[in-house]
Length: 404
Image (cartoon, rainbow, N blue to C red; front, side, top):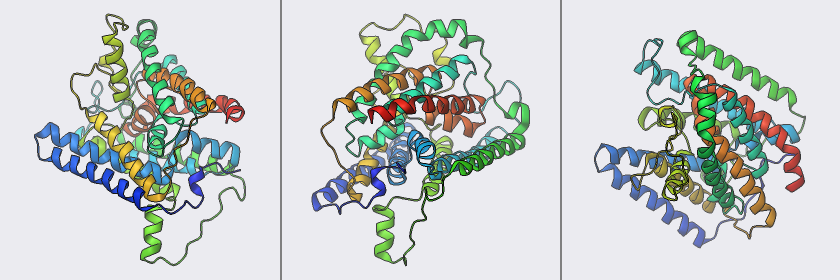
C-alpha cells in the first residue's frame, strides 16, 4: 500500500476563483519581496527570507516532501521514493554547506565553529527529545514543516498540530532548566570537521547516506513504486508537470538541499520552529509563566526562541512565505481541500503537536533545523536526531494506524 498522499491522484482542474486567489497570494509575496528589497540591509535580508520561504513552500507542496510520510511509505508500503528524496536533500545540502563553510572558515581549527550553523550539544537529552519529536510526528501525521505546507492546503489537522506545538514549546521552557543544569550544560558540542577535516566529513557523510539509500532500496517491495509514464513533452504537458502533477520525489529533495545551502549562505540556517518558539516564549513571558532565567538557552546554536521585540523576524517571514507559497501552489493544482475537522483530527493534532513542540524546544530545533541543517553543517547532533526521531516514528506508527 502506498500512502504518499491523496495528491498523488489526478486532481480536479482548478476553477477561476481558485486561480485568482493563487494569483493574488503570489502577487502579495512578490510585492513583499520587492518592497523589502528596496530597504536597508536588514530589510533586504527579510525580503530574501520571504522569497526563500515561498520557494520552499512550493517545493514541499509540489513534491509532497514530509519526513514522517516518507518513512511511513517505506515501512508500510515498501515505497522508497520519499526516503530517497530525504537522503538526496541531505546529500545536496552537505555538498552546498561544504562549499560555503570551506570558503568562510578554510581551516576547521579547534574551538572555532562556522557562523550560525546549527551545531548543538550531544547528550541523552537530545536523543530523548528527538524520540519524543518522532513519536509526535507519528501521532499528528506530519512533521512541523509538513503541517505548515498542509496549512496552505486546508488541512484540518495542521492548525491544531501547530497550536499544540506552541504549547509544547511552553512546556519545554518549563523543563529546560533542570535538564540543562543536570545534563546539557556538560554535553559536548561535536563538529565533525574538527576531527575529520572537511574532506573526511564530506566523504563520511556521503558514504552513510549512500548506505542508507541501499538499505531503503533493500526494504522496497516490488511494484510499490511504479514508474511514472513519460508522455511527449509539449507546452501543455510541461505546464501540467510543473503546476499540477506531483513533482518527482528526488527532484523535490534535491531542491530542498539547494534551498538549505542558499539560505545558509545569504540568510541563515534553514529552520521552521524559531518563530513558533518565539511566539510561545513571548506569550509565556507576558503571562509570567517562564522561569526568571532560562540557563544557557540563548547561548546554544539552533532555532532561536528569543522573546519577540520586533514584528517581523527572518524566520517569521520565511514561515509566512512557506505557507503562502504552499497555498498558491495548492490552489493552482486543485489541491486546496479544506474540510470540517473530526475529533480525531483535533485530538491527534494537539497531542502530536504538544510532543513535537516539547521535543523541538528541548532539541533546539526539528527535522529541518536540527536534522537537515545540522547534518548539512557536519554536526553530530543532526545524526543523533535522525536516528532517535526515526525510532520515535517507528514506535508511534502502530498508534497512528489505530487513529488514522
